[in-house]
Length: 384
Image (cartoon, rainbow, N blue to C red; front, side, top):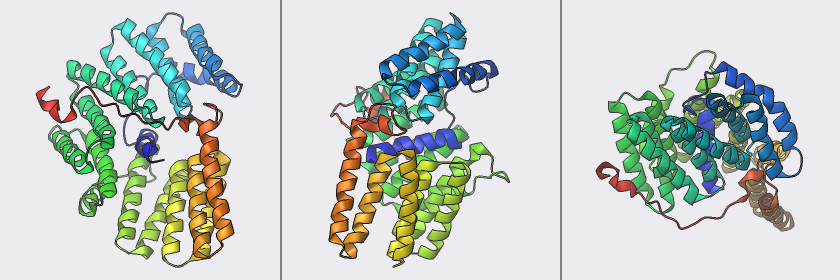
């Protein structure tokens, strides 16, 4: 599941308020209404067998509504694409995104074309296609550089740096992200500043650089929030609370960590953010296990299992089985432990065999990695 984590973080930022999504369409009421009107027909078709037919059906519906009006086509495709992403039907989202590129090219709208490439890179990243993830990011970067869109350039470079983690030392990537943060700070680019603090929180935690992680958690905690919290503010609040909880747990302050995990859980439930909610339940289970509270650890796992099963989030179900196996082994219930391990393995296998779009998480079927390297050498951006 490791390659999904950057995507899930980005998805949470997009829909919890950390980073703005597409540059266009978000304030266009008519195209939003068009996507809303068409969606029930498309959603119904998605439940039918034959994914390829469904994807063509999406384009046909939008074309029937918009005719040859490129603005309507592009922005209605955008609305549908985001709804497909929310369903985790990323193959269909890719199909629509590729059509958006064609529309933008017909318009000669370089910014819209670059934005479409950014969306495509995110989707390809989620399904494990490293080559097309980086290809689309590099196309977007080149266009943003031609347009002189400094904020978009920084945001795209962040994506390329994250993809480079598969073949570079994490410390090198963190150093270059810190340089981008300095540039964003100089530019007073608050959106990218927040984005980079969120990304650096995650990367420094992964690298075990907890002093640096503390800095980024502290910054996020100081960002003012409305009372009550507005929908677009949940991302910052969730990741600040979760980061603080993780830091406290690492430092052995389990009672305080539990308080912040509970705060994170309440925020996830209010949003709602089901994926992160289940992950927090796993963290609470681990914490209670460390405290010797076996009954509570099992209770949290049972809650997580029920939610993951209901949403058919197979990767999280597999993690849940593995945690249950750990507890069963510690209790010398070796037969149960073996059963849980088998269930974890079969859940992952079943997930990989599901048809795209058949469940919320079936889209993550393609785990294959490649050894492909980007054409652009990331460390030479400043000299390119």
